[in-house]
Image 1 (cartoon, rainbow, N blue to C red):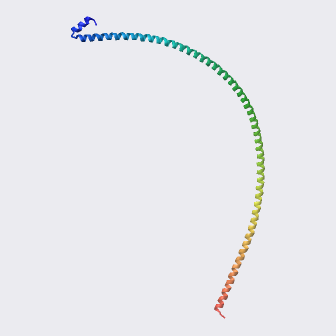
Image 2 (image 1 turned 180 degrees about the vertical axis):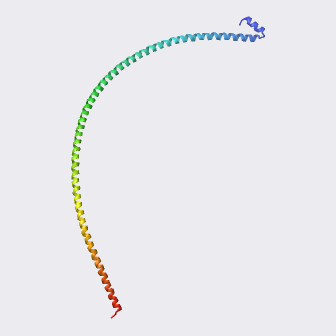
Image 3 (image 1 turned 90 degrees about the vertical axis):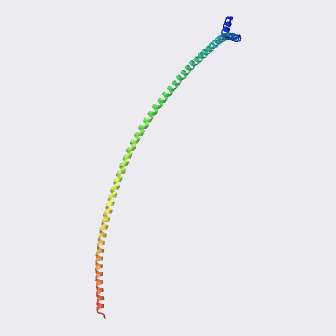
Length: 203
């Protein structure tokens, strides 16, 4: 602090001790500012050095990454080429297998068509034989039905004759019963007359 500043403070009413303490405080603050500026300068230097180191390391890392990327790119291109080759081989194999399957399917289709035609012919022949058998069975059934009708008619006629004979016999029996009824009545009347006579004219 300058002498004129000290005199002004004293004239303003400050004591000598207050002025001295204030001067020491100002000197201390001035020294602290100098230290701060020096520390700031050192920090800037360290930051500059650190930036340079970081730039070097980043450059090295970029170079390493570029190398790795180039290697990966080359490996990817090689892998892509290999995969394309395998895909081409697989396509060729699949095409060959598909062609074989197509030929087998065509052959199987032809065989199935032939078997179906044979089965159809056999079915038609079987239907014809079955129709002939059905016709034969129907004819035999018709003959049996006609024969059964004749037998039933004959039996019915025989039963009718037997029934007529039974009816005649029943008529005869009925006449005999009437005769027996009259005979029984006559005998009963005779017995009643004899009884009355014996009762009215005892011996």
